[in-house]
Length: 315
Image (cartoon, rainbow, N blue to C red; front, top):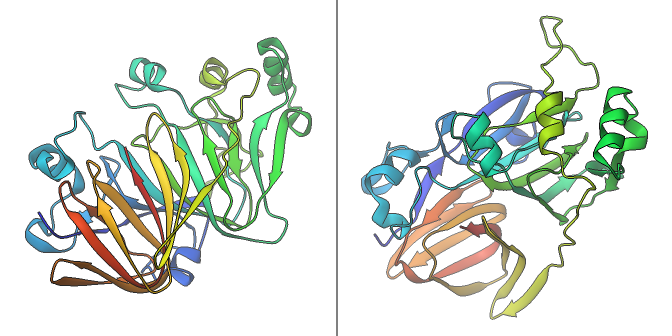
């Protein structure tokens, strides 16, 4: 197949969500508490739908199941990655995700969840929670049980353009005023450690998962220092953020026109700024901020024209 597969996202209402997915990206959101855009998803909790070409109105999960040749015939029961945009209008819960083996055993065969974040935009002096200060499991357990959150949790200031790699087992949370693009394993398993004693519209506190969290939190905290590697190309720049077990993630910037090659099993592309076109042989497809598409296996060379910023990933 020699054309991009454009996808229609799925939106999720969240207690901490807002309206930036509408105001910043032009998405038609129904709720003032829209927290998540599942942009490229084959997960049963929210499937992206193809909006063009011969596979129009098919789910991504269905393509993975029945048209694996589009993805280089790589193995796996589920589409391996999930791309989201998150609008943290308020603090998210303090949380942690399991690894593959723990999730398989305790979450009905679900994948674990290693993820990474690209900060699209944020308020001045915005922060995230990233890691903890406990040196031993005993110390971690005591600090959680005694609610010593200010002593336990590590806060990190963020700015637009920052990138964070968040392996399974990492205590983390987005805080108020942060808008990110997240690339993650295809999983919807989250263990809440603390939720600020918030209540929902029914006056009920959200469930915590202390025992499972204690099972999976990495002690002491390990942090991979991401060093972005920019490379100038004719008409733009490619920045490599991470290449690891589950995914590789890049930022592509185009300021006039630039030629690229699709030589992976497939590429997931999300336009986070600007507008332009993608040209494949003689076919031209318009691109704008908020578009998400997959470039299938064997597509070869293509050209991006315009002023564009994309986050690009592959397994």
